[in-house]
Amino acid sequence: MEQPVTPPASDNAAQPQQFSSTPRPARPLARRRVRVVAGVAGLLVGALALTACGGDAKANDDGKDGKDSANSDASAAKDASTLKITISAKDGSTNASINDVNVKAEGGKLSDVTMTEAQGGKAVPGALAADGLSWKPTGKVERGTQYKITANGKDDKGRAATENAQFTTVSAKDSFIGTYTPDNGATVGVGMPVSFTFNKAITNKKDVLSHITVTSSSGQQVVGHWFNSTRLDFRPEQYWKAGSKVTMKIDLDKVEGAKGIYGVQSKEVTFTIGRNQVSTVDVNTQKMTVQQDGKTIKTIPVSTGSAEHPTYNGQMVISEKFTQTRMNGDSVGFGGEYDIKDVPHAMRLSTSGTFMHGNYWYKGDPFGNDGTSHGCVGMKDVQGAGGDTPAKWMFDHSLIGDVVVVKNSPDKPIAPDNGLNGWNMPWSQWTAAASS
Image (tube, rainbow, N blue to C red):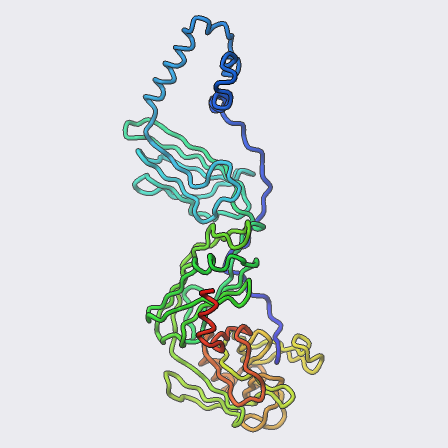
């Protein structure tokens, strides 16, 4: 089973940048006075004047200054703005969301909002709603970063109000993300599952599963299945209906995936199911029959695995396509038996290295006659991936997500988690794990 040497796939979610925290600025003295009063009420009444805003304690002997201060405070409170400004991230929080930062106004309107990185002062652009009742950032909010927000506004009488908050977003250490396939806007074959791989082990599997929903315009029931603590796949009982639209809603923001580890993703992804193409490889005849929407459109001679290295049986899904790629036996335990640097028209069928690909190097004509490979499904081709060959035809007529079924091989069925091959698990077993 050949394994190509290819660069690792990139994540669908941006990687975080780390910033060191800066000291919090001192709070205004007036707020500090309120805290002192609350903390010592009933204990230090006689010394209260000495712990307030300063001055000579004797000035309060006749009670006049105390009354004047109280009257001033009452007058200020009476004339205060009725605008209530709420910043979603609490002042001083260290685990704030990166997706749900916002400012809202009640009893008036916002006039301006600024959001900056506490270290360096880099501004985060944002947008104020037309009605002045809300604001949200339009620029990227990074993980593990300290931010400051200042929001200003006025009530209907023109009285001003300001709210400030300084907070730190959830760090990479304390958060998790899931890379997934297929991506938004893709058109895929009928066998394509939705597959998540999380960057940290998930222990609260039910909570995470309940915050990802996958629905189809066909009305098919779609169920998620955990293969292990980091992989979660979704599929219907039967292949997707051709032409249907599939929508995935990811609502993992602030969901606790494991103790102290929180999700940071919130997005919606839609992809389209293309025509129904299922190809069947019969090891007994060394031929592959390609069907679209139930009708045979092509029969291609192939060469499957040899007696020593048979091809897996079962339903396999094309997960990657390469016009040319390198296949090295060292990568899949075959030592130095082969190292071909320009394998043409290669389509991955398993994680362990099963491919359907073109073959230009074999001497003779095994296609349609003998199994000669290390477990792959080979087709006649030419070096350089050019020309009108069976392998090129198959490559050009295949989508990521198309199904390739192998039958009559002496090997065992492929494992459901070896590639995107969950179709090899009975539906009763697939759904049982989802409800446990």
